[in-house]
Length: 574
Image 1 (cartoon, rainbow, N blue to C red):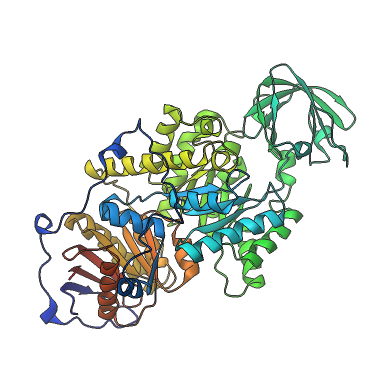
Image 2 (cartoon, rainbow, N blue to C red):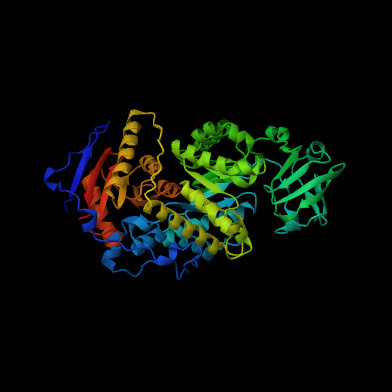
């Protein structure tokens, strides 16, 4: 099968195969191409949040396809939920913003994890602050099993606890409520027995020495607040001034005279001894990302990446730096450059800086990450009210909308999916709001005039970067249905994602781990496909396989790129 194409080949270190001139023809104009199916009208209504799609024996895809089609389609792998979305709504209606869900007691069962995957979860996060390693191992393996058996590509992110000051386990209770005016005791005493009510263990031995009467304690980024009223040896008595819910192992921030007390925190190591054990566990389990809490400088990121390389030869585990302290903001650019991605942990960050500064800092971080070609996750309290209630506040919807409008790569649920009463509904809200804001942005043709700085160092990478910049502009100007990129390590796909084109990006790779990692980046739909060195053969085979699964139609206009040949081709699906 010959492909109708117009090709532009840029000569790089690897010579490209010339196209056959007899195959060239002009693309079919957009008004003559087959029309794709549209989103249902209800999804555009921000006041109407759809119920999550139920999973019946898996996901809503056609497992009973004809045997000949199934045999052909088996040669290419794509996330099952994305495949269903493409079949139902077409290219333009696919969601670009990725969704990260924290798996906890409310969602740790196989059926619950599958429901999240069907609902659009791209990355499953396990928080090492809670649970033991056997519990986390079970969750990680449940996600892997789901991927293998049901055709998903959900990545796994392990989030380290960090060595900042935090509370203990609340004696095994899932939470505790602090009411206004109550007196609680924060103690460094170690005890093997259950602590009495209103006594909380603190992990930092110097806590009682460091605090002063009159200091304020912010719990979990300000979810509750206490004033220090008395010190008695290892015990610190505090009065609750802002009531709230206390969760096990919540972080504690000390404020004095209107500013955060940083001296002791600055002396604590970023990666604790427990974190190193957890990191070894994550490497052994083959997680896709490790998120490092309370990063202060690029040095710790570089150290961890070297350690991962030494412990696991050939490993491509990505290191995510969590920005949640004043120290991180001072060294922001160097941390972003050293990391494989960034998480804007607004809860703890908001406990160290004035609250009114959080929105502008979030925007600054998202913008800088895009400039430096690093994926960025906006996290913390996106839909906090949905831990208890089935619908979000409109202020929360506006917050989510702003993160999508800023073109953040991903949004993250924490307590909403880990311990909330409505995890599936919370995920459904993120999905529907993301889809609506993305569609509005495209309909209004609000192309952001962001001048992207060069990020490549080698000559070959510079060629790839220029090709991707040009391909994104061509995609917008020609109104193409999708960009296809064939990539071994994912780099060229990430460069395309950085440009934020109007259309989705189909990223084809032969590596399962690269495929999962690409699932964190904006606009990328990662496929696993065995590739050859012949670009035309790859394209013909891809078209045949995708048409067999009903994911593309004859006449669809695509731009195809390859990091092996460093070329651009514009063509219609035959």
